Image 1 (cartoon, helix red, strand yellow):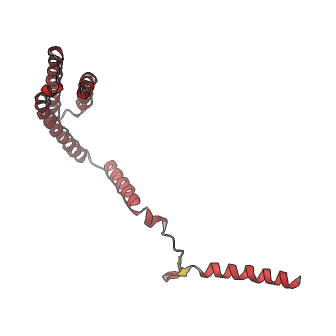
Image 2 (cartoon, rainbow, N blue to C red):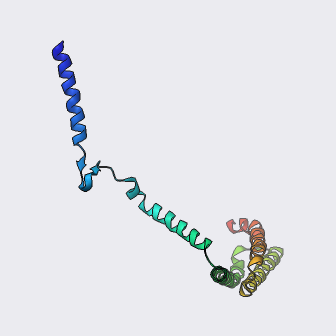
Length: 159
């Protein structure tokens, strides 16, 4: 019986000592576990989050002049997008024969396309004049026009 207990204790101790020897020691006394470090696995995510945090902090301490430069930059980008979308209205109108619309549907399609083009030009003008506060309302109008057209004609494309 004593031999059995002694054997069990020796087995337990040997298992414990083998477990601690499984980890190789690195320089500086760190232990290599064979598992990648969490920070190494998430390195890209952490960098992105830290960059975003840094940008937020920098924005907080921007001068009014720096903020104005950034607003103008975004306004120009919105204006360029509006110009490109207005140019694409002609492409939408050119695609109309492929939709096989009746006369009433063609009239509605052209009216909505022209309204969209006008709204895009208005947005472009707003951005050129740097009326940043008017941009959200203009975008809402554009979205309403797009939604209306899609509700009427997206189903017809499946014909």
